[in-house]
Length: 184
Image (cartoon, rainbow, N blue to C red; front, side, top):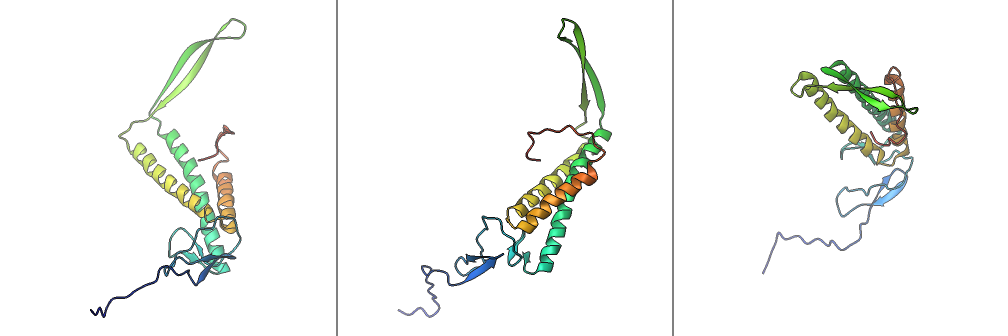
């Protein structure tokens, strides 16, 4: 029996080529262009995949451009956080003050006042807040994925961008520091 168009591939052979990922060599999986994910920090600029399969950094100039883009993205993230807070304060609909008696240390009664702020669900302000929240979440995941490349240059760009963004956008904000906050 003859099968002229049947091709046989041997998938048991070890891959015979490697790709450089920064200064680290990783084996190529099969015959495709799949690189293994880097699991340690490194400083390199060759074959650094950034967010999308077609976005590969191969030169120092491309790495500088990518770092500037990542820095700006991290600054945008910090600006979005502060911008959302400003919009929320501007669009507060109803403010109620509730006072309640609280026993003092020496037996006296003190009045403690709490401010309650409301916003209407079906309003343009809430729709804009929701849209900005979606953008903020997507940007934060992009920054996380950039950091997960473990490329030292890109990680530094994320950190510097977050710091510069905070410095530029948060200076007027009344800050209450929560030392337990680790995630945004």
